[in-house]
Image (tube, rainbow, N blue to C red; front, side):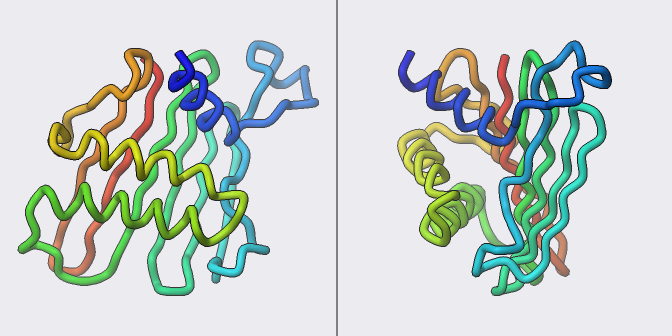
Length: 165
C-alpha cells in the first residue's frame, strides 16, 4: 500500500490543481511541467497543455532529448521518451532496461526537484530480471510500467510508460 501511494504521488506530482473550474469541472487536476528552464542541465525546454493532456520536451546539455506525455484524470499515465542520436541497433534488451535506469539516475542527481526519479531507478533494478521489452510489469497491482524501444541507425528512443490500471 505504501508503494502504491508513492507511485500515485509521483504521477500526481506532475499534475496541479486547476483554478479554472469552468473548463475542467470534471477533473480537478491538469498536467504540470516536470522540467524547467532554470535547471542547470536543460538547454531548451517546452511544455504545452491541452485539456487533460500535457506534452513536454527537454533538451539536456549532453544532447539527450526527453519528451514526456501526460494524460488522464481518473487513471493517470505518463510516457517518457528518451531520445539519443546514434546507431544503437547492435544492443540487446538488457541494454535498454539498464539505459532507462541510468537516465533516471542521472536526472535524479541533477536537480532536487527530480530526486523522485531515484525511486524509478530502484524499481527498475529490482524488477530487471523479469522485465521484457514492450510487456508491462507491475511494481504494484494498480500500476503498470512498460519499457520499450524504437531503434534506427540514426537514433534510439527508449519509451518508459507508467499507467494506472
